[in-house]
Structures are given as structure tokens and as C-alpha cells.
Length: 581
Image 1 (cartoon, rainbow, N blue to C red):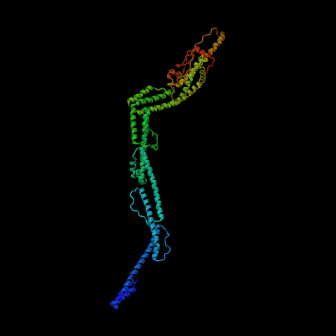
Image 2 (cartoon, one colour):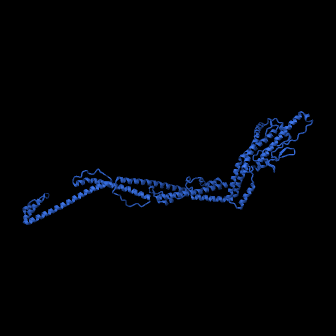
Image 3 (tube, rainbow, N blue to C red):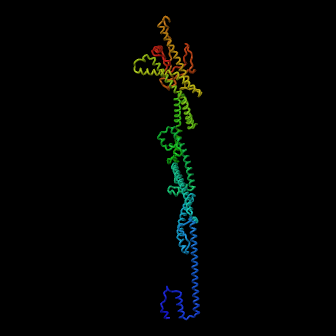
């Protein structure tokens, strides 16, 4: 035993089954184990070693199977990843499948790592784009509650599929942008309409959707179909409201202007409502001033119209007489006589009776004014010719007075001016017959068209013209008689024996001086100054007892009786006698 103890124990690293068995033999020898016991123990040791080997082999088999399964799974995962990512080939895949299992796993592992990372990145890309799609779709649908979970289909993570989602996202983004622009445009329109109508924009627009308030961001505004539809309806309602308010305001403005014109309202008072009348002819789109159609403004105009209506009723007589004066002025300028006193008494009676609506009375008077203007317009051309005729008659009267003046050729002041006027007067007087003929023709056409007589200040114009032409004819006859008498006296003075020793005195001459219907050069003189007809004749003539035809007419105011001396001086002058007065 000592010898054994003295021996140096073997180094652990050098221990083997043989050294252990040798040491076991030494121990047995020392102990004195029998051979049977030794064989039995060795057999047991062999069995235990066999069991260990079996366990090791089984573990190795399982490990190999696991590695093979892992390799197979790796290959399947590789194929699945490539399929999911839409990759037919991949740069990192090993070309050779030889080598140990671990070598094959080691070769395929980096590729799998890269593909797994690419898959994770791709899933993230899909999640991002699908999340945006889901969000925009929810905004368009008007669903404010986002879907809590979003599942990405990992069976198809190809770039093609991702591109499809991107295309869908771009379409939705464009639709969102278009809808957002529509929303902003409609909101802007609502803002402008509310400003013009004097309405609260905030309450109006937030009633459609709370997100439409100016305080929220642009991207946060609702773009759903309901929001767009409600906004569009709001715009339509506001536009219709704007249209109705504008029509009401224009109606009030018209009434204001009519009432102002009726009552001659001063400009200072009218200017207080310039904000009302400035839109009287504006279209709906042209009215854009804030508050231009506010309800308080319309109510203010209504109150003013009501006030003026009440004032108009109290000033009805003044207004009516103003209208009557306008009517009388139109007829006066058209030389149409009307019974002004009876008309004013009728107006007073209607107003005092209270049985007539002031508006109807004024409307009737306005209608009379329109009729009077139309009649005055139809008489305009004839009246212009009457004015020319009257002016020519005045020049005719002046020319006769000038021809009877024995001192007309003296070198007095103004003699040359009178000579020039006489030359022009003769030219004008020569045109009188043609002017009268034209005036008669136009007057007859006027009377035929209207089946009524054309009067000038109450006197039939054709009768006035007929009277003038008869007097003119009588005057021409008188001039011829005077010329014949002058010749007779001249012959008798040269040869008195032929006519007897004592010439008979000449009959006193009573010359008619033909003048126009105006006196003192007044174109619009009173009726007493124009030619007046006999009460029972229209310019007819009667035969006097001496055989001469004289017009049964009363002489106008400016008639001047021509004495014998005047006639003699007229015919003894050196100037030739004009063919017409």
C-alpha cells in the first residue's frame, strides 16, 4: 500500500481509461477481489460505458436532426422571404449546397439576417403607407375614430404591392388636397357672405363642423362628404339670403329716391343713406362691402321709408301742386290751353275728401305728365315753324314801318344797320308764303293723324294762318289800288283836259297792315295779342257794301292804321315795293 501511496498520482490531463483500469487492478489486488467479482465489475463498467456512448450517440443524432431541420427551415424561410419580398433572386444566397450542416447553416445565416431586416423595414414601410391611407380614408369618410389595430399582410411585401399602396396614397392625398381646397374656398365664401350680411361667421361655420374654425390648422379641417355638402348648402342659403336682402334694399332705395324727389329732400339728408342707394342697380355679385346687407341697415331704411311716407301724406297738397305746375308748364311751352283753375280745384277736392290714395293720385298725375310730354313732342316741329313764321311777321311789320320812314336814308346814327336789317327782312318776308304753305300742310297731317284740331294758345292754327293770308291778300289788293290811283293822278296832272278841268278828290285810303300773331316781338305773347277769329267763322270772308272783300277779323294789338299821307309816302318812295310784306 505504501508503495502505491508513494507513487505520484497521474496528471489529470493524462488520465485515460487504461490508467484508470490499471489503478483499479492495483486496488483490487490490494483488496483481494476475486476474479468473479472483478469480471462482474468490469462487465458493469462496460455496460455503463455503453450506456454513455448510446446517450451521446442519441444526443448527436438529435443534434444532427435539429441542425438538419434548422437548415431545412432556413431554406424554407429563405424561400418564403424571397417570395414575400417579391425577390426571385438574391445576391447573398450561397450557390453551393455542399459541406457540413453547420457550414451550410453558417453560409445561409447572413442572407437570412439581411432578408429578415429587409422584411422588417418593408413591413414598416407598408405600415406607414397603409396608416396614411387609413387616416385619409377615415377623413374622407368623416370617421373621426381611427382604427386601433392595423395588420400588415406579410405574405406579400413586394415592391410592386408597396407601389400600389403608394399610388393609392397619392390618389387619396390628391383627393384630400382637392377637398381641402374646396372646403377652404367654401369657408372663404361663407366668410365673405357673412361679412356682407352682417352675420357671425364663427357660429355659422362651426355649426357645419367644429374643425372649420380659423383657430384650427388647415390639415385638421374636415373634408368629409357631409362637410362639403353642408358647406355648399350653407353657401346656397347665404347667397339666396343675400339676393333677397339686396332686392329688398333696392326696393327700399327706389322708394327713398322717389320720396326724396317728391319732397325735394336736400342733398345733405339724402347723403345719410348713400350706403343704401349706392347698390340700387348693383348685381348680387357686385355687392361685397362688409355690412352692406346687414339686417339693421335694412331696418333703418324701412324706418326711413315709413317716416317719409307719413311726411308725404302731410305734404300731399304741396307735392300734387308741384306736379300740376310741371304739367301746366309742359302745356304752356307747347301752347296748349288747359283749365288750370279747375284742375287745381279738383286736386284740392280729392285730397280734402280723403277718398283717393295719395300714391294713386301722384301716379295719375305722372301719367298725365307723360301724356303731355308726348303731345308736346308731337307738336314740336309745327311749333318751331310757327316760331319762324311769327319772327318773319315781326320783320314784315318792321319793314313796313321802315319803308314809310322818309328819313330812312339820312346819315343818322344806325342808318346803315337799319339798311342791312331791311335787306335781310325782305329776304325773310319773301319766304313767308312758302313757310305758311309748309306749316298748313304739316298741321293738316297732324290733325288727320289725331282727328283733332291743332290749336295755338286756344286758337286753331289753320284759322290763324287763313286769317293771315286773307289779310295779306287784301293788303296786296290795296297796294295795287294805290299804284293805279297814283298813275291816274300823274296822268291827270300831265293832261288835265282829258280827265276834266277839276280832278275829283281821291277817296280816303284805309290801308291794312298785316302783322303776325305776336305783339312787341313776343313769341309767347298772351292770346289777346294774336290774330283772333270772328266768333262764328273760321277765317271766312264777307263782302262789304263798297264791293271790297274784308276779313271778318278783329285787328291785333299792333295793328296801325295807314293814313292817306302814309300811303302816298309809301308809294312815292324811290325804293321798289317788295312783292311780299
